[in-house]
Length: 348
Ligand SMILES: Cc1cc2ncn([C@H]3O[C@H](COP(=O)(O)O)[C@@H](O)[C@H]3O)c2cc1C
Ligand SMILES: O=C(O)c1cccnc1
Image 1 (spheres, rainbow, N blue to C red):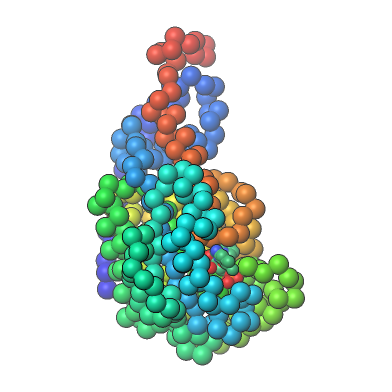
Image 2: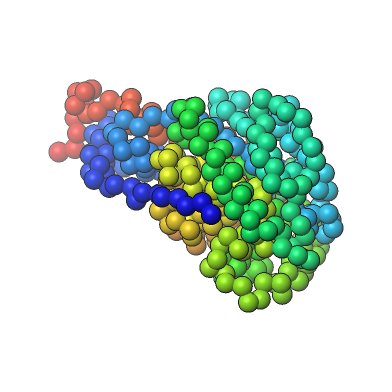
């Protein structure tokens, strides 16, 4: 089992960072959330001039056994593999936005049910050809869960060695809104119906079927220690969720800024933060998804999302869209003139 050592962020620099923000030629506090992000970046990097270096976005892909039934997911399981090809060809939403903002994107095969040819943007980290159906048996063995955590950590370490200090976590896996809702319910104790959203569906009747079907999973978990997060992940999780979780923990350990995408990415952050609460200080939750449970999940973690764009896609698409705002926060701190520099009069 892999151990992470995530340091608490030293707050000693906070007054100097706040003073720097306040010295800029603007009314006090007028850059709102940009000011909070600028300070967070400064604290994570422990300097008054934080820099965003080589931004990366990883899209972790994995299949879910339950998706084979076609009951909780309107789109068939094959779409995971097909979308991975689409990512590698540059045709998905996340590709378009990542290209727009010069974010390097890599696709991780965490556990896709199919074989993939080698590709320069593909990281092969397959644990298995999808999880098992957790309605019938554990999604994965505990051993595979630990392998997935370690693999995610290894991948992030490799990316950081290329000079990246800000990294985003997106995902692709048909059926993974169901796995995420179950994980949220067991970890937070929020009623299951408040955790389940429509996912890729737009129909109320499909939603009701999804809720009824997922309620049947509840029996399998009787008697397990719900605070054993790795065990829970192995019972009902996904390989992409486990790898994101390990990746986020290693990113925090390395002092990187973590960009969390929508509902599924936030579930990985939830598990990671249950294991190491200091993780949240390294995270920027870029947007609040339309997926039903996301707002409640963010509130449970005591965090606020940067934007609310009514998006409900996943892939890391929210990260790619919101990254320029984080960039703006960093730039104003570094480039904006102070009252003194510009000869502008401050308040009396
Ligand atoms: C074409 C297509 C592209 C996607 N890109 C992200 N997702 C998103 O939808 C899936 C989760 O929804 P559910 O639990 O309802 O299956 C995930 O793969 C997620 O990333 C997509 C889904 C589809 C169909
Ligand atoms: O918010 C998300 O991450 C999300 C929502 C719906 C479908 N897929 C992903």
